[in-house]
Length: 410
Image (cartoon, rainbow, N blue to C red; front, side):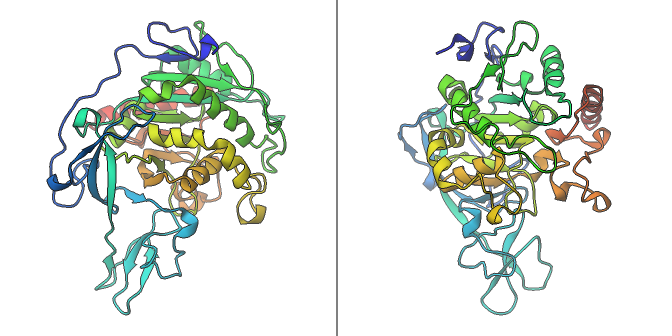
């Protein structure tokens, strides 16, 4: 293995770097509550269901506790089926007990034994279909502990395929110099189609076009190469180095996403992480809501993705895309979502972790068609990511404003 790809605990010059003395687990027992979440997302547990198994897994922990969790929580929802197997808004959802559209829940209607997928239901007698999910949740050393550590990475594409100048390298160089975004995580790395210095002796990890699909097609709207081919090799490099296994979460951040890691930790630290892993859905009211500006995987989920890349490459028609190619080939985020779904990884809907101009539901009604829209940073106090900011000056202006706004709330 190239030494640039190995974890260097005592060095800041290797490509995958750990921030020293930041890996901590504060062991606390979760309070027993009466069926719904408290504060961020405390899992409701039953003492009688708490038993430890010793199943071996390649992850940050190999011990699990049994837990019964209500899949429909006030500020998050677990979906353990493939979206394509869930019900559309006009279909009866009582049998599937899940909805194809992100952010929708199954409500039993006041008349007739039928369910309907809706954002909410105000009809008298309309009831949310409760769904208890029996999970094996990660429990290091036999204790249900907060999951607070993250391995974060970004990807810089030198050959974008577009004639428009890319600012990714400039953004990453400044972020690294100021130790913000992914560089404030417990461990971090940057991958690229080129070996590039980002300052201070830190370089990207180069990936090669092994399958010859880095440049097979361009997006009609941007002229940029479809990124899935490159990301397959990035994921394999991450797996080869193995650093991600030492941390609770694996997080991919777009270079132009203003990212505050501490906010993400606060939001997700108490989410249940089942044995088959979870990934976080961050865009509502769409069929596939795992959007690439901020991709959050439990360590188990990311491990399942990387173990199945080659299988998914042949099973998923990503070069055509969904709906018979209506929207073109799948991007890396949709490929990852489909691959994990097909291999048993559950989704948790956490729409508040990011404000993304690429997510239609995040945009104001009069700007619903503007993908260049982004949130007003001075008003963002809790979202972990705000996207997109391609100019370095605008990026850091936004970062300063959202950090200042967050301080005012305390």
